[in-house]
Amino acid sequence: MAREASVSDNRYGRAAWVVWGVGLFAYAVVVMHRTSLGVAGLEAAQHFGTTPGVISTFVVLQLATYALAQVPVGLLLDRFGSRALLTAGVLLAGVGQVLLAFADDLPLAYAARLLLGVGDACIFNSVLRLLPRWFDAKRVPILSQVTGMCSAIGQIAAVAVVLPLIQHLGWTNGLLIAASTCLLAALATVTFVRNAPRGEATAVVADPLREIPSNVLGVTKHPATQLGFWIHFTSGFSMNAFLFMWGMPYLIVGQGLTQLAASGLFTLLSVASMVAGPIIGALTARHPLRRSNLALIVIGALILSWAAVLLWPGKAPAPLLFLLIVVIAANGPSTGIGFDFPRTNLPVTRLGAANGVVIAGGFTGGTILILLMGIFLDWVSGGADYSAQDLRLAWALQAPFFVVGLAGILISRRRLRALMAEEGVIVPSWREVVERIRRNRGAGR
Figure 1: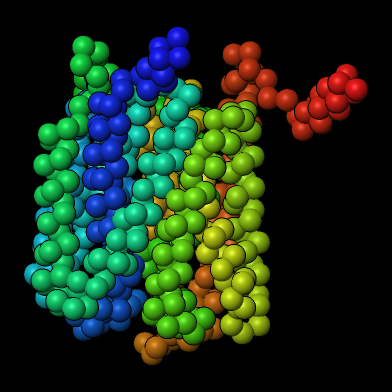
Figure 2 (figure 1 turned 120 degrees about the vertical axis):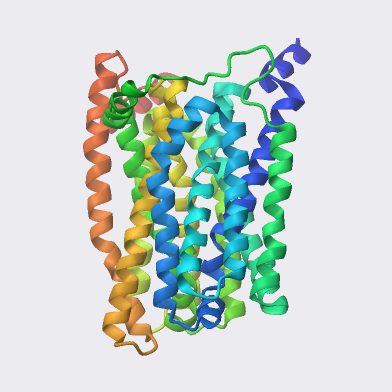
Protein backbone atom coordinates (compact mmCIF):
# COMPACT_ATOMS: atom_id res chain seq x y z
CA MET A 1 0.00 0.00 0.00
CA ALA A 2 2.83 2.39 0.83
CA ARG A 3 4.37 1.73 -2.56
CA GLU A 4 1.04 2.39 -4.32
CA ALA A 5 0.63 5.68 -2.43
CA SER A 6 4.11 6.73 -3.44
CA VAL A 7 3.40 6.04 -7.10
CA SER A 8 0.12 7.96 -6.85
CA ASP A 9 1.86 10.96 -5.28
CA ASN A 10 4.47 11.04 -8.01
CA ARG A 11 1.76 10.38 -10.61
CA TYR A 12 4.06 9.83 -13.60
CA GLY A 13 7.27 9.08 -11.73
CA ARG A 14 10.67 10.01 -13.08
CA ALA A 15 9.36 11.22 -16.44
CA ALA A 16 7.40 14.03 -14.78
CA TRP A 17 10.46 15.28 -12.90
CA VAL A 18 12.63 15.15 -16.04
CA VAL A 19 10.09 17.12 -18.09
CA TRP A 20 9.72 19.72 -15.36
CA GLY A 21 13.46 19.86 -14.67
CA VAL A 22 14.29 20.63 -18.29
CA GLY A 23 11.62 23.32 -18.29
CA LEU A 24 13.22 24.84 -15.18
CA PHE A 25 16.62 24.82 -16.87
CA ALA A 26 15.23 26.66 -19.90
CA TYR A 27 13.53 29.18 -17.60
CA ALA A 28 16.69 29.85 -15.57
CA VAL A 29 18.75 30.34 -18.74
CA VAL A 30 16.34 32.90 -20.18
CA VAL A 31 16.05 34.74 -16.85
CA MET A 32 19.84 35.00 -16.81
CA HIS A 33 19.72 36.80 -20.15
CA ARG A 34 16.63 38.79 -19.19
CA THR A 35 18.37 40.33 -16.17
CA SER A 36 21.79 40.78 -17.78
CA LEU A 37 21.33 44.52 -18.36
CA GLY A 38 20.09 44.95 -14.81
CA VAL A 39 23.48 43.90 -13.47
CA ALA A 40 25.60 45.14 -16.40
CA GLY A 41 23.80 48.45 -16.98
CA LEU A 42 26.92 50.52 -16.31
CA GLU A 43 28.96 48.38 -18.72
CA ALA A 44 26.21 48.70 -21.34
CA ALA A 45 26.18 52.49 -20.94
CA GLN A 46 29.96 52.55 -21.46
CA HIS A 47 29.78 50.23 -24.48
CA PHE A 48 27.13 52.32 -26.25
CA GLY A 49 28.53 55.65 -25.04
CA THR A 50 25.30 56.79 -23.41
CA THR A 51 23.67 57.23 -19.98
CA PRO A 52 22.01 54.67 -17.72
CA GLY A 53 18.75 56.53 -18.39
CA VAL A 54 18.98 55.64 -22.08
CA ILE A 55 19.98 52.07 -21.22
CA SER A 56 16.79 51.87 -19.14
CA THR A 57 14.83 52.25 -22.38
CA PHE A 58 16.36 48.92 -23.51
CA VAL A 59 14.82 47.29 -20.49
CA VAL A 60 11.54 49.14 -20.98
CA LEU A 61 11.28 47.86 -24.55
CA GLN A 62 12.16 44.33 -23.46
CA LEU A 63 9.64 44.26 -20.62
CA ALA A 64 6.94 45.99 -22.65
CA THR A 65 7.38 43.39 -25.36
CA TYR A 66 7.27 40.65 -22.72
CA ALA A 67 4.04 42.00 -21.23
CA LEU A 68 2.31 42.66 -24.57
CA ALA A 69 3.27 39.22 -25.91
CA GLN A 70 1.75 37.32 -22.98
CA VAL A 71 -1.80 36.92 -24.30
CA PRO A 72 -0.78 36.03 -27.89
CA VAL A 73 1.79 33.59 -26.49
CA GLY A 74 -0.88 32.15 -24.19
CA LEU A 75 -3.14 31.52 -27.18
CA LEU A 76 -0.29 29.83 -29.06
CA LEU A 77 0.47 27.80 -25.97
CA ASP A 78 -3.12 26.56 -25.72
CA ARG A 79 -2.94 25.64 -29.41
CA PHE A 80 0.56 24.10 -29.78
CA GLY A 81 1.64 23.14 -26.26
CA SER A 82 4.62 23.79 -24.03
CA ARG A 83 7.33 21.94 -25.97
CA ALA A 84 7.04 24.08 -29.12
CA LEU A 85 6.81 27.36 -27.20
CA LEU A 86 9.73 26.55 -24.88
CA THR A 87 11.96 25.66 -27.83
CA ALA A 88 11.01 28.76 -29.80
CA GLY A 89 11.42 30.95 -26.72
CA VAL A 90 14.96 29.95 -25.79
CA LEU A 91 16.09 30.19 -29.43
CA LEU A 92 14.63 33.69 -29.82
CA ALA A 93 16.28 34.77 -26.56
CA GLY A 94 19.61 33.39 -27.77
CA VAL A 95 19.35 35.18 -31.11
CA GLY A 96 18.54 38.40 -29.25
CA GLN A 97 21.67 38.11 -27.10
CA VAL A 98 23.86 37.32 -30.12
CA LEU A 99 22.49 40.38 -31.87
CA LEU A 100 23.18 42.50 -28.78
CA ALA A 101 26.73 41.17 -28.65
CA PHE A 102 27.46 42.60 -32.11
CA ALA A 103 25.41 45.78 -31.69
CA ASP A 104 27.37 49.03 -31.73
CA ASP A 105 24.43 51.40 -32.13
CA LEU A 106 21.15 51.85 -30.32
CA PRO A 107 18.67 50.74 -33.05
CA LEU A 108 20.30 47.32 -33.32
CA ALA A 109 20.38 47.01 -29.53
CA TYR A 110 16.65 47.82 -29.39
CA ALA A 111 15.95 45.08 -31.96
CA ALA A 112 17.98 42.65 -29.85
CA ARG A 113 16.01 43.38 -26.69
CA LEU A 114 12.72 43.10 -28.59
CA LEU A 115 13.66 39.58 -29.70
CA LEU A 116 14.68 38.68 -26.17
CA GLY A 117 11.38 40.01 -24.84
CA VAL A 118 9.37 37.83 -27.25
CA GLY A 119 11.44 34.77 -26.43
CA ASP A 120 11.21 35.41 -22.72
CA ALA A 121 7.42 35.68 -22.95
CA CYS A 122 7.21 32.06 -24.12
CA ILE A 123 8.99 30.44 -21.18
CA PHE A 124 7.41 30.75 -17.75
CA ASN A 125 3.83 30.24 -18.91
CA SER A 126 4.92 27.15 -20.85
CA VAL A 127 6.50 25.60 -17.76
CA LEU A 128 3.44 26.40 -15.63
CA ARG A 129 1.16 24.72 -18.16
CA LEU A 130 3.11 21.48 -17.84
CA LEU A 131 2.43 21.11 -14.13
CA PRO A 132 -1.31 20.17 -14.14
CA ARG A 133 -0.58 17.64 -16.90
CA TRP A 134 2.27 15.85 -15.11
CA PHE A 135 1.60 16.25 -11.35
CA ASP A 136 -1.25 15.77 -8.88
CA ALA A 137 -3.29 18.91 -8.16
CA LYS A 138 -2.15 19.06 -4.53
CA ARG A 139 1.47 19.41 -5.65
CA VAL A 140 0.88 22.16 -8.21
CA PRO A 141 0.86 25.26 -5.90
CA ILE A 142 4.22 24.33 -4.37
CA LEU A 143 5.73 23.31 -7.72
CA SER A 144 4.50 26.58 -9.25
CA GLN A 145 6.36 28.47 -6.53
CA VAL A 146 9.48 26.38 -7.02
CA THR A 147 9.26 27.13 -10.73
CA GLY A 148 9.17 30.86 -10.05
CA MET A 149 11.92 30.37 -7.48
CA CYS A 150 14.22 29.13 -10.22
CA SER A 151 14.25 32.64 -11.64
CA ALA A 152 16.58 33.34 -8.71
CA ILE A 153 19.07 30.88 -10.21
CA GLY A 154 19.00 32.88 -13.43
CA GLN A 155 19.43 36.13 -11.49
CA ILE A 156 22.42 34.72 -9.61
CA ALA A 157 23.87 33.51 -12.91
CA ALA A 158 23.52 37.02 -14.37
CA VAL A 159 25.65 38.35 -11.51
CA ALA A 160 28.05 35.42 -11.26
CA VAL A 161 28.37 34.48 -14.94
CA VAL A 162 27.27 37.15 -17.41
CA LEU A 163 28.73 40.19 -15.61
CA PRO A 164 32.21 38.63 -15.08
CA LEU A 165 32.24 37.38 -18.69
CA ILE A 166 31.56 40.90 -19.97
CA GLN A 167 34.07 42.48 -17.59
CA HIS A 168 36.90 40.04 -18.36
CA LEU A 169 36.29 39.07 -22.00
CA GLY A 170 34.65 42.22 -23.31
CA TRP A 171 31.13 42.99 -24.41
CA THR A 172 30.98 40.85 -27.56
CA ASN A 173 32.84 37.73 -26.43
CA GLY A 174 31.20 37.71 -23.02
CA LEU A 175 27.67 37.88 -24.42
CA LEU A 176 28.37 35.30 -27.13
CA ILE A 177 29.61 32.73 -24.61
CA ALA A 178 26.62 33.41 -22.38
CA ALA A 179 24.23 33.08 -25.35
CA SER A 180 25.46 29.55 -26.07
CA THR A 181 23.44 28.34 -23.08
CA CYS A 182 20.25 29.02 -25.06
CA LEU A 183 21.23 26.47 -27.70
CA LEU A 184 21.87 23.91 -24.99
CA ALA A 185 18.45 24.63 -23.43
CA ALA A 186 16.71 24.29 -26.81
CA LEU A 187 18.33 20.90 -27.48
CA ALA A 188 17.33 19.65 -24.02
CA THR A 189 13.74 20.82 -24.53
CA VAL A 190 13.34 19.10 -27.89
CA THR A 191 14.80 15.89 -26.48
CA PHE A 192 13.02 15.57 -23.14
CA VAL A 193 9.90 17.78 -22.88
CA ARG A 194 6.47 16.40 -23.78
CA ASN A 195 3.17 18.28 -23.50
CA ALA A 196 1.49 15.40 -21.66
CA PRO A 197 2.22 11.83 -20.55
CA ARG A 198 2.15 9.20 -23.28
CA GLY A 199 -1.36 7.98 -24.01
CA GLU A 200 -3.10 11.05 -22.55
CA ALA A 201 -4.74 13.97 -24.32
CA THR A 202 -2.40 16.94 -24.69
CA ALA A 203 -5.12 19.44 -23.67
CA VAL A 204 -4.33 21.72 -26.61
CA VAL A 205 -7.16 23.42 -28.46
CA ALA A 206 -7.68 24.68 -31.98
CA ASP A 207 -10.40 27.30 -31.72
CA PRO A 208 -11.67 28.76 -34.98
CA LEU A 209 -10.08 32.15 -35.57
CA ARG A 210 -13.42 33.94 -35.35
CA GLU A 211 -13.90 32.62 -31.78
CA ILE A 212 -10.49 33.67 -30.44
CA PRO A 213 -11.41 37.28 -29.53
CA SER A 214 -14.51 36.23 -27.58
CA ASN A 215 -12.60 33.45 -25.81
CA VAL A 216 -9.81 35.83 -24.79
CA LEU A 217 -12.37 38.37 -23.61
CA GLY A 218 -14.14 35.70 -21.58
CA VAL A 219 -10.89 34.63 -19.89
CA THR A 220 -9.87 38.23 -19.23
CA LYS A 221 -13.24 39.20 -17.75
CA HIS A 222 -13.30 36.29 -15.33
CA PRO A 223 -12.70 37.62 -11.79
CA ALA A 224 -10.17 34.84 -11.08
CA THR A 225 -7.98 36.07 -13.94
CA GLN A 226 -8.40 39.69 -12.84
CA LEU A 227 -7.52 38.92 -9.23
CA GLY A 228 -4.45 37.03 -10.42
CA PHE A 229 -3.46 40.01 -12.60
CA TRP A 230 -3.71 42.53 -9.75
CA ILE A 231 -1.83 40.33 -7.29
CA HIS A 232 0.94 39.84 -9.84
CA PHE A 233 0.93 43.58 -10.62
CA THR A 234 1.11 44.76 -7.00
CA SER A 235 3.64 42.18 -5.83
CA GLY A 236 5.74 42.37 -8.97
CA PHE A 237 6.19 45.92 -10.28
CA SER A 238 8.62 47.08 -7.57
CA MET A 239 10.71 43.92 -7.73
CA ASN A 240 10.91 44.09 -11.53
CA ALA A 241 11.99 47.73 -11.52
CA PHE A 242 14.61 46.89 -8.88
CA LEU A 243 15.96 43.80 -10.62
CA PHE A 244 15.91 44.92 -14.21
CA MET A 245 17.15 48.49 -13.98
CA TRP A 246 17.15 50.72 -10.94
CA GLY A 247 18.19 48.43 -8.08
CA MET A 248 21.93 48.43 -8.75
CA PRO A 249 22.16 52.22 -9.33
CA TYR A 250 20.13 52.82 -6.16
CA LEU A 251 22.39 50.62 -4.04
CA ILE A 252 25.61 52.08 -5.46
CA VAL A 253 24.67 55.76 -5.84
CA GLY A 254 21.73 56.08 -3.47
CA GLN A 255 23.18 54.02 -0.63
CA GLY A 256 26.90 54.42 -1.31
CA LEU A 257 27.68 50.71 -1.60
CA THR A 258 30.52 49.27 -3.65
CA GLN A 259 29.61 47.23 -6.72
CA LEU A 260 30.76 44.11 -4.85
CA ALA A 261 28.48 44.86 -1.88
CA ALA A 262 25.55 45.69 -4.17
CA SER A 263 26.10 42.45 -6.10
CA GLY A 264 26.07 40.65 -2.78
CA LEU A 265 22.65 42.11 -1.95
CA PHE A 266 21.38 41.05 -5.38
CA THR A 267 22.57 37.55 -4.60
CA LEU A 268 20.86 37.75 -1.21
CA LEU A 269 17.64 38.77 -2.97
CA SER A 270 17.83 35.71 -5.18
CA VAL A 271 18.59 33.33 -2.31
CA ALA A 272 15.86 34.80 -0.10
CA SER A 273 13.39 34.40 -2.95
CA MET A 274 14.34 30.73 -3.23
CA VAL A 275 13.70 30.25 0.50
CA ALA A 276 10.39 32.15 0.46
CA GLY A 277 8.99 30.31 -2.57
CA PRO A 278 8.28 26.90 -1.03
CA ILE A 279 6.95 28.52 2.16
CA ILE A 280 4.45 30.67 0.26
CA GLY A 281 3.57 27.72 -1.96
CA ALA A 282 2.87 25.49 1.06
CA LEU A 283 0.72 28.17 2.71
CA THR A 284 -1.19 28.67 -0.54
CA ALA A 285 -1.91 24.95 -0.80
CA ARG A 286 -2.86 24.62 2.89
CA HIS A 287 -5.14 27.69 3.04
CA PRO A 288 -6.71 28.03 -0.45
CA LEU A 289 -9.47 30.34 0.79
CA ARG A 290 -6.91 32.76 2.29
CA ARG A 291 -4.55 33.04 -0.67
CA SER A 292 -5.33 36.69 -1.34
CA ASN A 293 -4.78 37.56 2.33
CA LEU A 294 -1.33 36.01 2.16
CA ALA A 295 -0.54 38.16 -0.86
CA LEU A 296 -1.82 41.29 0.91
CA ILE A 297 0.37 40.59 3.95
CA VAL A 298 3.50 40.28 1.80
CA ILE A 299 2.59 43.41 -0.19
CA GLY A 300 1.96 45.32 3.05
CA ALA A 301 5.42 44.36 4.30
CA LEU A 302 6.90 45.69 1.05
CA ILE A 303 5.11 49.03 1.37
CA LEU A 304 6.30 49.47 4.96
CA SER A 305 9.88 48.49 4.10
CA TRP A 306 10.15 50.92 1.20
CA ALA A 307 8.59 53.69 3.29
CA ALA A 308 11.12 53.12 6.09
CA VAL A 309 14.12 53.14 3.72
CA LEU A 310 13.00 56.15 1.66
CA LEU A 311 11.99 58.23 4.70
CA TRP A 312 15.18 57.47 6.59
CA PRO A 313 17.38 60.61 6.67
CA GLY A 314 20.53 59.91 4.70
CA LYS A 315 21.73 56.40 3.96
CA ALA A 316 19.65 53.62 5.45
CA PRO A 317 21.31 51.46 8.13
CA ALA A 318 22.47 48.04 6.97
CA PRO A 319 19.77 46.04 8.85
CA LEU A 320 16.99 48.13 7.28
CA LEU A 321 18.50 47.74 3.81
CA PHE A 322 18.85 44.02 4.46
CA LEU A 323 15.18 43.84 5.46
CA LEU A 324 14.10 45.67 2.30
CA ILE A 325 15.98 43.20 0.11
CA VAL A 326 14.43 40.20 1.90
CA VAL A 327 10.91 41.64 1.60
CA ILE A 328 11.42 42.45 -2.09
CA ALA A 329 12.55 38.84 -2.49
CA ALA A 330 9.38 37.53 -0.79
CA ASN A 331 7.23 39.46 -3.25
CA GLY A 332 8.67 37.41 -6.10
CA PRO A 333 6.94 34.21 -4.90
CA SER A 334 3.94 36.31 -3.89
CA THR A 335 3.29 37.06 -7.56
CA GLY A 336 2.91 33.30 -8.03
CA ILE A 337 -0.20 33.31 -5.85
CA GLY A 338 -1.92 35.05 -8.76
CA PHE A 339 -1.62 31.95 -10.96
CA ASP A 340 -3.49 29.80 -8.47
CA PHE A 341 -6.80 31.59 -9.05
CA PRO A 342 -7.14 30.79 -12.78
CA ARG A 343 -5.85 27.25 -12.11
CA THR A 344 -8.68 26.52 -9.68
CA ASN A 345 -11.44 28.41 -11.51
CA LEU A 346 -10.83 27.93 -15.25
CA PRO A 347 -10.48 24.84 -17.51
CA VAL A 348 -6.96 23.65 -18.25
CA THR A 349 -7.47 24.39 -21.94
CA ARG A 350 -7.68 28.13 -21.10
CA LEU A 351 -4.75 28.32 -18.68
CA GLY A 352 -2.29 29.52 -21.33
CA ALA A 353 -4.32 32.63 -22.10
CA ALA A 354 -5.33 33.21 -18.46
CA ASN A 355 -1.77 32.88 -17.14
CA GLY A 356 -0.64 35.20 -19.92
CA VAL A 357 -2.97 37.88 -18.59
CA VAL A 358 -1.71 37.31 -15.04
CA ILE A 359 1.97 37.45 -16.03
CA ALA A 360 1.35 40.73 -17.83
CA GLY A 361 0.46 42.32 -14.47
CA GLY A 362 3.82 42.68 -12.75
CA PHE A 363 5.69 43.27 -15.98
CA THR A 364 3.30 45.96 -17.18
CA GLY A 365 3.67 47.74 -13.85
CA GLY A 366 7.44 47.26 -13.81
CA THR A 367 7.81 48.53 -17.36
CA ILE A 368 5.84 51.70 -16.67
CA LEU A 369 7.71 52.34 -13.41
CA ILE A 370 11.13 51.86 -15.03
CA LEU A 371 10.17 54.27 -17.81
CA LEU A 372 8.79 56.89 -15.43
CA MET A 373 11.85 56.66 -13.19
CA GLY A 374 14.18 57.04 -16.17
CA ILE A 375 12.31 60.09 -17.48
CA PHE A 376 12.15 61.62 -14.01
CA LEU A 377 15.86 61.06 -13.29
CA ASP A 378 16.99 62.54 -16.61
CA TRP A 379 14.73 65.54 -15.99
CA VAL A 380 15.67 66.19 -12.37
CA SER A 381 19.41 65.71 -12.95
CA GLY A 382 19.49 67.84 -16.08
CA GLY A 383 21.70 65.31 -17.87
CA ALA A 384 24.24 65.19 -15.04
CA ASP A 385 24.98 62.20 -12.83
CA TYR A 386 22.16 61.15 -10.53
CA SER A 387 22.41 62.01 -6.85
CA ALA A 388 21.22 59.93 -3.91
CA GLN A 389 18.32 62.34 -3.42
CA ASP A 390 17.33 62.03 -7.09
CA LEU A 391 17.08 58.25 -6.73
CA ARG A 392 15.16 58.54 -3.47
CA LEU A 393 12.55 60.74 -5.17
CA ALA A 394 12.42 58.43 -8.18
CA TRP A 395 11.62 55.40 -6.03
CA ALA A 396 8.84 57.39 -4.33
CA LEU A 397 6.99 57.18 -7.67
CA GLN A 398 5.91 53.70 -6.55
CA ALA A 399 3.21 55.11 -4.25
CA PRO A 400 0.36 55.47 -6.80
CA PHE A 401 1.18 52.02 -8.21
CA PHE A 402 0.53 50.48 -4.79
CA VAL A 403 -2.75 52.39 -4.44
CA VAL A 404 -4.04 51.23 -7.84
CA GLY A 405 -2.87 47.66 -7.26
CA LEU A 406 -4.47 47.29 -3.84
CA ALA A 407 -7.75 48.69 -5.14
CA GLY A 408 -7.67 46.20 -8.01
CA ILE A 409 -7.07 43.28 -5.64
CA LEU A 410 -9.92 44.20 -3.30
CA ILE A 411 -12.45 44.86 -6.07
CA SER A 412 -11.68 41.71 -8.09
CA ARG A 413 -11.58 39.59 -4.91
CA ARG A 414 -15.06 40.76 -3.98
CA ARG A 415 -16.33 39.77 -7.44
CA LEU A 416 -14.65 36.35 -7.31
CA ARG A 417 -16.02 35.59 -3.84
CA ALA A 418 -19.50 36.52 -5.02
CA LEU A 419 -19.12 34.08 -7.93
CA MET A 420 -17.80 31.38 -5.57
CA ALA A 421 -20.79 31.94 -3.26
CA GLU A 422 -23.14 31.30 -6.18
CA GLU A 423 -21.35 27.96 -6.64
CA GLY A 424 -21.69 27.09 -2.95
CA VAL A 425 -18.16 28.02 -1.78
CA ILE A 426 -18.35 30.51 1.08
CA VAL A 427 -15.24 32.25 2.44
CA PRO A 428 -15.83 32.71 6.18
CA SER A 429 -15.06 36.07 7.75
CA TRP A 430 -12.16 36.41 10.15
CA ARG A 431 -14.65 36.85 12.98
CA GLU A 432 -16.22 33.50 12.10
CA VAL A 433 -12.81 31.85 11.94
CA VAL A 434 -11.81 33.19 15.35
CA GLU A 435 -15.12 32.11 16.85
CA ARG A 436 -14.74 28.59 15.40
CA ILE A 437 -11.23 28.29 16.83
CA ARG A 438 -12.51 29.45 20.21
CA ARG A 439 -15.34 26.88 20.17
CA ASN A 440 -12.94 24.08 19.18
CA ARG A 441 -10.57 24.97 22.01
CA GLY A 442 -13.48 25.06 24.45
CA ALA A 443 -14.67 21.63 23.28
CA GLY A 444 -11.19 20.19 23.74
CA ARG A 445 -10.98 21.11 27.42
